Length: 242
Image (cartoon, rainbow, N blue to C red; front, side, top):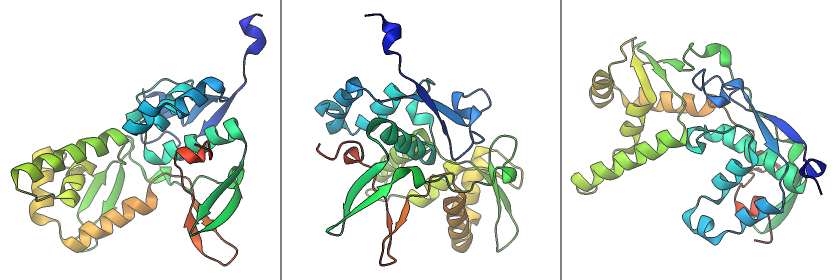
C-alpha cells in the first residue's frame, strides 16, 4: 500500500497571542499552528511511562502533532492550552467528561474560545506596557514562555540555597519579566528598580494586569448551579482511561 493512500488531513489552530509576542522570525509569529490528526503512534506517547514520570508526556505529544517545528519551551502557556484543546478534539472528539468535587461534567470543547487579546497595545517587539498607579513610571514587560519560567525557577532555587531558604519568587520573576523602566532597558537598572523602588501596591497592580491581559483560552466553565470551575488539562484530558 502506498504511503500517499494514508495521508491524513491537517488543521490550523489560531493562537490566542496571534503570534504577536514572538520574534518575527519565530515559527509561531504567524499566529497559527498546523496540526495533524492523532494516530495510534501518538497514543504510544500518551502511555509512555518514562515520559509520564518525567512530566513531559504532553510536551512530547505536541511535538509529534505540530507540523511547525519549534522548541516547545519557547511557547507561551496560553498558546499551549489552545494547542492542547485542538489536539484533544482532533484525537478523540469534542466531548469531554471530567469530574469536579465528586460530580461529573460533560462539555463541548469546540465552544472553548480564545480570550480577547489586545494586540494593539503591544510594542513592535511584542512587549506590553503598564503605568504604575502610584507615580506614573512606565514599564515594558514580556509575556513569559515556559523557558523563561524554567530560568526563573532555577534562579530562585539557586538564591534559596545561598540564602538558607529565602525564595524571592515575586521579585525574581519581575526582574525577568520587565524589559524596560521609563525607556531604560539596562538589566542591572531594572533589577535595581525592582529591589529598591518598586512599591508593593505597584508590584501587585502590574502582576494583576499581566495576568488579566495574558493571551490564553477561556478555560472557565459555569455549572448549572452557577459555579465557575476551571477545565482541567492533564494526561486524562486526552485519555480518561489512563
